[in-house]
Amino acid sequence: MRINADTGRCVGAGQCVLTEPDVFDQDDDGIVLLLADEVGGERLEQARTAVQICPSAALSLEESG
Image (tube, rainbow, N blue to C red; front, side, top):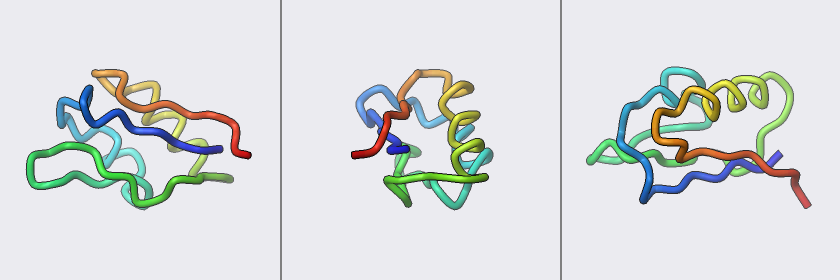
């Protein structure tokens, strides 16, 4: 699965980083940074959780390819 981050919507809550720090980080302003574009396995489940709990709905998942 491919993960997308809308940095214009991100409010810097950091819930994604707390959920899956191997996939998400934050810049100096707190805006989400993707450390991986594609996720699978256990990281996919954590990424799904991050998408669901993002307070600004800045994250989404889509099928790869």
